[in-house]
Image (tube, rainbow, N blue to C red; front, top):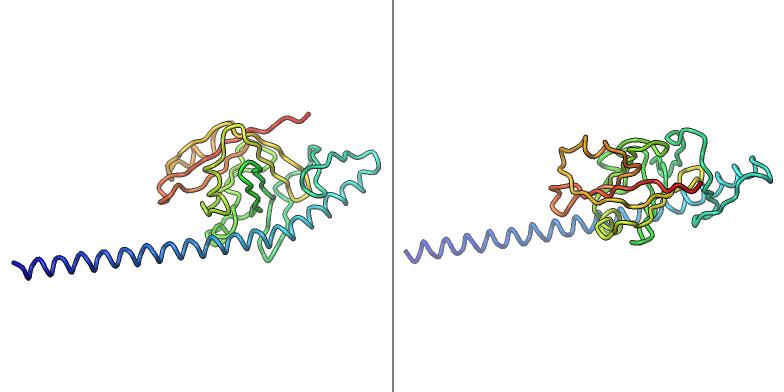
Length: 219
Protein backbone atom coordinates (compact mmCIF):
# COMPACT_ATOMS: atom_id res chain seq x y z
CA UNK A 1 0.00 0.00 0.00
CA UNK A 2 2.84 2.37 0.93
CA UNK A 3 4.55 1.65 -2.39
CA UNK A 4 1.33 2.46 -4.26
CA UNK A 5 1.05 5.79 -2.44
CA UNK A 6 4.67 6.56 -3.19
CA UNK A 7 4.17 5.85 -6.87
CA UNK A 8 0.99 7.96 -6.92
CA UNK A 9 2.78 10.79 -5.13
CA UNK A 10 5.65 10.66 -7.58
CA UNK A 11 3.17 10.72 -10.44
CA UNK A 12 1.51 13.84 -9.05
CA UNK A 13 4.90 15.50 -8.65
CA UNK A 14 5.84 14.71 -12.24
CA UNK A 15 2.51 15.99 -13.52
CA UNK A 16 2.90 19.14 -11.44
CA UNK A 17 6.42 19.71 -12.72
CA UNK A 18 5.24 19.21 -16.31
CA UNK A 19 2.42 21.72 -15.87
CA UNK A 20 4.82 24.26 -14.37
CA UNK A 21 7.22 23.82 -17.29
CA UNK A 22 4.32 24.04 -19.76
CA UNK A 23 3.08 27.23 -18.14
CA UNK A 24 6.56 28.73 -18.18
CA UNK A 25 6.95 27.81 -21.84
CA UNK A 26 3.63 29.42 -22.76
CA UNK A 27 4.54 32.55 -20.79
CA UNK A 28 7.88 32.85 -22.58
CA UNK A 29 6.21 32.21 -25.96
CA UNK A 30 3.58 34.90 -25.32
CA UNK A 31 6.23 37.31 -24.04
CA UNK A 32 8.36 36.75 -27.14
CA UNK A 33 5.40 37.26 -29.49
CA UNK A 34 4.34 40.37 -27.57
CA UNK A 35 7.81 41.91 -27.82
CA UNK A 36 8.08 40.99 -31.50
CA UNK A 37 4.69 42.58 -32.20
CA UNK A 38 5.70 45.73 -30.27
CA UNK A 39 8.92 46.09 -32.27
CA UNK A 40 7.18 45.44 -35.60
CA UNK A 41 4.54 48.03 -34.77
CA UNK A 42 7.06 50.66 -33.65
CA UNK A 43 9.32 50.13 -36.66
CA UNK A 44 6.39 50.27 -39.10
CA UNK A 45 4.96 53.39 -37.45
CA UNK A 46 8.05 55.43 -38.27
CA UNK A 47 7.77 54.68 -41.99
CA UNK A 48 3.99 55.01 -42.03
CA UNK A 49 3.99 58.39 -40.27
CA UNK A 50 6.54 59.73 -42.73
CA UNK A 51 4.61 58.48 -45.75
CA UNK A 52 1.28 59.77 -44.43
CA UNK A 53 2.80 63.21 -43.87
CA UNK A 54 4.17 63.21 -47.41
CA UNK A 55 0.83 62.09 -48.87
CA UNK A 56 -1.09 64.72 -46.91
CA UNK A 57 1.35 67.45 -47.94
CA UNK A 58 1.05 66.44 -51.60
CA UNK A 59 -2.75 66.58 -51.33
CA UNK A 60 -2.66 70.01 -49.74
CA UNK A 61 -0.33 71.39 -52.37
CA UNK A 62 -2.54 69.97 -55.10
CA UNK A 63 -5.61 71.56 -53.52
CA UNK A 64 -3.95 74.99 -53.64
CA UNK A 65 -4.08 77.83 -51.09
CA UNK A 66 -7.83 77.42 -50.58
CA UNK A 67 -7.60 73.73 -49.68
CA UNK A 68 -8.71 72.59 -46.23
CA UNK A 69 -5.92 72.58 -43.64
CA UNK A 70 -7.48 71.40 -40.40
CA UNK A 71 -4.45 69.84 -38.74
CA UNK A 72 -4.88 66.75 -36.59
CA UNK A 73 -2.74 65.37 -33.80
CA UNK A 74 -0.75 63.40 -36.35
CA UNK A 75 1.91 65.24 -38.36
CA UNK A 76 0.64 66.24 -41.76
CA UNK A 77 -2.83 64.70 -41.40
CA UNK A 78 -6.08 66.56 -42.01
CA UNK A 79 -9.68 66.12 -40.98
CA UNK A 80 -11.62 66.93 -44.14
CA UNK A 81 -13.83 64.22 -45.65
CA UNK A 82 -12.14 62.14 -48.35
CA UNK A 83 -13.89 61.61 -51.68
CA UNK A 84 -12.23 58.40 -52.88
CA UNK A 85 -12.47 54.65 -52.07
CA UNK A 86 -10.48 54.30 -48.88
CA UNK A 87 -9.77 50.59 -49.31
CA UNK A 88 -7.45 51.15 -52.29
CA UNK A 89 -4.95 53.35 -50.44
CA UNK A 90 -2.22 51.55 -48.51
CA UNK A 91 1.37 52.06 -47.41
CA UNK A 92 3.75 49.11 -47.81
CA UNK A 93 6.43 48.53 -45.18
CA UNK A 94 8.61 45.39 -45.29
CA UNK A 95 6.11 43.65 -47.56
CA UNK A 96 3.04 44.37 -45.41
CA UNK A 97 0.33 46.68 -46.77
CA UNK A 98 -0.94 49.00 -44.05
CA UNK A 99 -4.36 50.56 -44.39
CA UNK A 100 -4.29 53.05 -41.52
CA UNK A 101 -3.05 53.90 -38.04
CA UNK A 102 -5.30 53.45 -35.01
CA UNK A 103 -5.12 55.68 -31.92
CA UNK A 104 -7.00 55.27 -28.62
CA UNK A 105 -5.61 58.16 -26.52
CA UNK A 106 -7.35 57.05 -23.31
CA UNK A 107 -5.15 53.93 -23.03
CA UNK A 108 -2.17 55.17 -25.07
CA UNK A 109 -2.80 52.66 -27.84
CA UNK A 110 -1.07 53.47 -31.15
CA UNK A 111 -0.85 50.70 -33.74
CA UNK A 112 -0.67 50.36 -37.52
CA UNK A 113 -3.41 48.25 -39.13
CA UNK A 114 -2.67 45.78 -41.91
CA UNK A 115 -4.97 45.76 -44.93
CA UNK A 116 -4.57 41.98 -45.19
CA UNK A 117 -5.42 39.41 -42.50
CA UNK A 118 -3.25 36.31 -42.21
CA UNK A 119 -2.26 34.45 -39.06
CA UNK A 120 1.37 35.46 -39.49
CA UNK A 121 0.55 39.17 -39.92
CA UNK A 122 -1.96 39.04 -37.05
CA UNK A 123 0.84 37.83 -34.74
CA UNK A 124 2.58 41.16 -35.38
CA UNK A 125 -0.07 43.86 -35.92
CA UNK A 126 -3.87 44.26 -35.92
CA UNK A 127 -5.57 43.54 -39.27
CA UNK A 128 -8.66 44.57 -41.15
CA UNK A 129 -11.21 41.81 -40.54
CA UNK A 130 -14.19 43.17 -42.47
CA UNK A 131 -15.44 46.22 -44.32
CA UNK A 132 -13.88 49.54 -45.31
CA UNK A 133 -13.32 52.90 -43.69
CA UNK A 134 -15.90 54.65 -45.83
CA UNK A 135 -18.80 52.43 -44.73
CA UNK A 136 -20.32 51.15 -41.49
CA UNK A 137 -19.21 47.69 -40.46
CA UNK A 138 -15.45 48.30 -40.49
CA UNK A 139 -13.93 45.67 -38.16
CA UNK A 140 -10.33 45.44 -36.94
CA UNK A 141 -8.98 42.32 -35.21
CA UNK A 142 -5.84 42.05 -33.08
CA UNK A 143 -4.19 39.68 -30.62
CA UNK A 144 -4.47 40.65 -26.96
CA UNK A 145 -0.82 41.63 -26.57
CA UNK A 146 -0.23 43.99 -23.66
CA UNK A 147 1.30 46.56 -26.04
CA UNK A 148 -1.53 46.15 -28.56
CA UNK A 149 -5.20 45.16 -28.42
CA UNK A 150 -4.81 43.84 -24.88
CA UNK A 151 -5.24 47.51 -23.94
CA UNK A 152 -8.82 47.44 -25.27
CA UNK A 153 -9.96 45.90 -21.98
CA UNK A 154 -9.17 49.23 -20.30
CA UNK A 155 -11.24 51.30 -22.74
CA UNK A 156 -14.39 52.87 -21.35
CA UNK A 157 -17.59 54.03 -23.04
CA UNK A 158 -17.22 57.55 -24.36
CA UNK A 159 -13.53 57.13 -25.18
CA UNK A 160 -12.19 58.77 -28.33
CA UNK A 161 -10.87 56.57 -31.14
CA UNK A 162 -8.94 58.05 -34.08
CA UNK A 163 -8.00 56.45 -37.37
CA UNK A 164 -5.60 58.15 -39.78
CA UNK A 165 -5.67 56.60 -43.23
CA UNK A 166 -2.86 56.32 -45.76
CA UNK A 167 -3.69 59.68 -47.34
CA UNK A 168 -3.71 61.53 -44.03
CA UNK A 169 -7.46 61.82 -43.52
CA UNK A 170 -8.58 61.62 -39.89
CA UNK A 171 -11.65 59.59 -38.90
CA UNK A 172 -12.95 60.21 -35.38
CA UNK A 173 -15.10 57.75 -33.43
CA UNK A 174 -16.52 57.40 -29.93
CA UNK A 175 -16.88 54.14 -27.98
CA UNK A 176 -20.56 53.35 -27.53
CA UNK A 177 -20.69 49.74 -26.34
CA UNK A 178 -18.56 46.85 -25.04
CA UNK A 179 -19.60 43.32 -25.99
CA UNK A 180 -18.38 39.78 -25.34
CA UNK A 181 -19.03 37.54 -28.35
CA UNK A 182 -18.47 33.85 -29.00
CA UNK A 183 -15.82 32.87 -31.59
CA UNK A 184 -18.47 31.49 -33.94
CA UNK A 185 -20.60 34.67 -33.79
CA UNK A 186 -19.25 35.98 -37.09
CA UNK A 187 -22.55 37.48 -38.24
CA UNK A 188 -23.00 39.31 -34.93
CA UNK A 189 -19.48 40.70 -35.25
CA UNK A 190 -19.93 42.19 -38.71
CA UNK A 191 -23.63 43.08 -38.63
CA UNK A 192 -25.40 46.01 -37.04
CA UNK A 193 -25.06 49.75 -37.49
CA UNK A 194 -21.68 50.16 -35.82
CA UNK A 195 -19.28 52.27 -37.84
CA UNK A 196 -16.22 50.63 -36.27
CA UNK A 197 -15.60 47.51 -34.18
CA UNK A 198 -12.32 46.55 -32.52
CA UNK A 199 -11.95 43.05 -31.15
CA UNK A 200 -9.47 40.76 -29.47
CA UNK A 201 -9.54 37.44 -27.64
CA UNK A 202 -10.32 37.21 -23.95
CA UNK A 203 -7.71 35.50 -21.79
CA UNK A 204 -7.71 31.84 -22.77
CA UNK A 205 -9.04 32.66 -26.23
CA UNK A 206 -12.57 31.42 -25.54
CA UNK A 207 -14.44 34.63 -26.38
CA UNK A 208 -14.09 37.86 -28.35
CA UNK A 209 -13.85 41.14 -26.44
CA UNK A 210 -15.43 43.70 -28.76
CA UNK A 211 -15.39 47.51 -28.62
CA UNK A 212 -18.18 49.09 -30.67
CA UNK A 213 -17.81 52.63 -31.97
CA UNK A 214 -19.81 55.20 -33.90
CA UNK A 215 -18.39 57.95 -36.05
CA UNK A 216 -18.26 61.52 -34.76
CA UNK A 217 -19.83 64.05 -37.11
CA UNK A 218 -17.40 66.95 -37.38
CA UNK A 219 -19.45 68.90 -39.89
